[in-house]
Amino acid sequence: MAELDNRAVAERLDAFAGLLDLSGASPYTARAYRRAAETIRETRVPILELARQGRAQELRGIGPGIAARLQELAETGTIAELDELRREVRPELVGFGRMLGLSPRRTTEIAAALGVETVDEFRRAAAEGRLRTAPGVGPATEAKILDRLRSGVDRPPRGLTLNRARQLAEEVAAALGGEVAGDPRRWAETSFDLAVVVPATRPATVISAFERLPQIVALVERGERRATGVTVDGVPVVLHLPVPARFGSELVRQTGSQAYVEALGPLPDASDEEALYAALGVPWCPPELREEPFRGEPPALVELADVHGDLHTHTTWSDGRASVREMAIAARDRGYEYLAICDHTPNVSVVPGLDADAVRRQAEEIAVANDELAPFRVLRGIEVDIRRDGRLDLPDDVLGELDWVQLSLHAGQREERSRLTGKVVEAMRHPAVRCLSHPKGRIVNHRPPNELDLEEVIAVALEHGVALEINGLPDRLDLSGEDARLAVEAGVRLVVSTDAHSVRGLGNMVLAVATARRGWATAADVLNTRPLAEVLAWRRRR
Image (cartoon, rainbow, N blue to C red; front, top):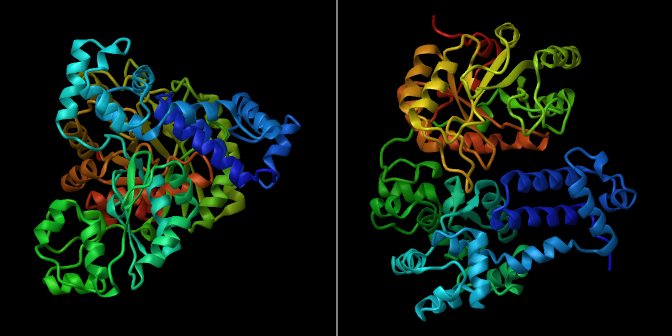
């Protein structure tokens, strides 16, 4: 059997991360595996050969735990813990358990006790009154589960994150000559419905090609195929095959939310979307705005090409995987004019952080990069943490030296509303602060938004000229599109950033921009669509 190449190894680690997510493991553990997978994809040397030599940890982002699993993969061709997770964690059953209010571990325990392996078997066991035979399931728990089963809710509360949904849907669409539709085309933060629309005069040929796709074959072999497609982690991937003359109509129908499409009225046949909207007598609407009924003239939404620079990135000085120079070159090659290096401060105890001395030593490395890469500019920045007592995590004189100061809250996300909000808005009033990072502190599918009073934050941002960030990490997307619209309507300036911890992470700008578009943001609403001189001149109102 041929040895796995780096791409195949990375796919194994991505699968490991996905199963860890479903098992309820720490999101930081899953993220570590995904970052290791990114590193391996970008590495030219065969990773399994490095693992045999005990050198895997020479690569950034690969610690002893992941290195041990790579060595196991090199020596045995498998990872025992991954195989065990595959047996224990059944994605569709786990997703169903979440809908019932059960943790992945609890779902797995109950399913094992009942001897069930599918959703249908779980439902049947509940209907037969066997739930209480499972350890720890008493009358109250049984009643709650049965009530939710009777409610008719038939999809899990966890969808695929935007990056995963877009990647899967785009791969399928490209292979079949179609277009992405459903939740991913609206750039929804999580996707519960993935759709691909393909104009087809011979549907059977397209269906045959669909079934032969590498992503789909694996799912069919696991028995997850459905009548109209397949499922990934319980989320359906549905193929729609209109004749070419109705392609535009079907693309609109499968892109918009049900409420949006119904408000348009009967859809006439049209070969493309522009012709459909013209036939309806309404302006063409960007997919990101097709959530709620809307028939007016949409604004000229911000575009990826409008962005002049990224104002939130990390390097090896904290928990990033690339140097200042490497990040700067990658940003310059994307056509940017500037890049802000915003490494963490010590209060974020789970990762390395920069104290005052380190911030000043990093300035020397930034100066060298600027000398080499001019006129491209690397900005001296920081992601300064708010301590539990409300103070900022660096002295005022150090903050005053910097080009760009991002304010962040990592500890204390679960504090009650008034205390949390008071601490954040007081920190926003600091004269060095330019922007508030990921304000609601959520982690998609893992941690709900905090209790921050966004209306008060918006008022303080307006008063003191502080921008609010849309963080492009796919498990953050914070502010959300809905929250970003509140800021836009109030006149607060947004910043679209990637929070990139690697060169590849700079690509998350597309997610930040898409989320800003969902918030009805134009280029004028986004600070880093402006040239460097205007960004540097962004000062607080006195």
